[in-house]
Every structure is written in C-alpha cells, then in structure tokens.
Amino acid sequence: MAAAFGPFCVAARSLLAAVATLAVLALAGDAAACVCANEPLDERLDAADAAIVARLVEVKEGLSFPPRRVLTFDVEQRVKGDLPGRIDVLSPTGTDCDLEVREEQVVGLLLTRDASGAWQGTACSVVDPGRLVAEGGEPRGGEIKVVVGIVVLGLVLALAFFRLRRGSRPQLPGAPG
Figure 1 (cartoon, rainbow, N blue to C red):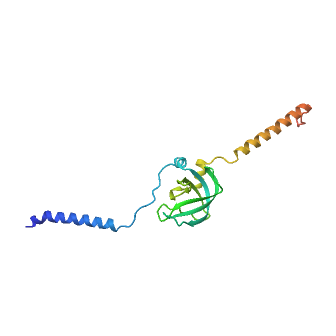
Figure 2 (cartoon, one colour):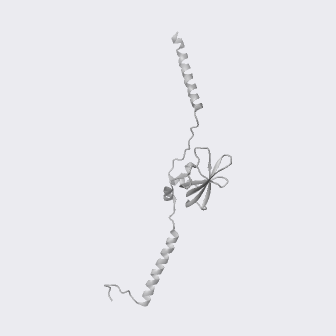
C-alpha cells in the first residue's frame, strides 16, 4: 500500500516546494538596485551631453509627477559642453538611482538633456572629479600661454634688432672686445 502512495507523496512534495517558492518571492521586498553601465569613462564621457566638475549648493524637492528633485550646482570646471556658472540638475526621487550628493561636495557629473532641454542626472552620473578632468579636460589657459609666448619672442627680437642697429655688443666678462 505504501507503494501506491509513493507517486502521490513525490507530487505533493513538489507542489509544496513550488508553493513555498512562490510565497517567498511574493513576500520578498523590492530588490531592484541602480544598475550603471560598466563602460570606461571615456566612452561614458562621449555619450554624455555635458560633463562638469561642480559643487552642490542647494536641493529643492519638486512637486511633480514623477517625483523629482532639483539639485543646484556651482560649476567649477566645464569638461564638456558650454554651460553657465550655475546649473540645475533634475534627479528622480524614491528610486535606487537618486542623485545623492552632500551639500558643498565637489563631484564630477556626466549629464544628459531631456526632451524639454533640462539637465538630468542619476547616481550613475557621478564620477571622480580628478579622473573626469584627466580624461576629458582641456588644458586651461592655452590661448594665454600662446599670446605671452609671442609677446616674449617679439621683445627678444626687438632687443636683438635694436642692438644690431646700434652696432654695440654687450660687455661680457671673458668675451673678445
């Protein structure tokens, strides 16, 4: 008689295991996490509409749907894009991808524009500011260095031509007279 109930016991155990598995999955909380692209920084920089090194100065909770926060940053260095000195960045709220930055913290940000032209940022937008500048920053003061170099060259040439015209040579110790 025990042999007759054998297949029934196996089926009952399988059914019980399936119900327990479904119950665990149904009762489990949200396990979603923010998943950022695992790409090199140079590729992420190319894909971004703008990139900045900035300091967070203000956070405003938006009354919009879907809920978003407005984070205001003072731009310390523009790495990509022509941006003003102060910029508002929209971030979703209530998700694992919220843009979480402390006030006065300096961060590197890779930003995108939404359809309305507003700047968007998420947790995946934050990068190390030093690496961002090293990867995409242009050297500062390049034009000024060229102008100063040309001015110095002009002064040296003018002095050389002035002395050549006068026919005088500087009196250096040990030089032929």
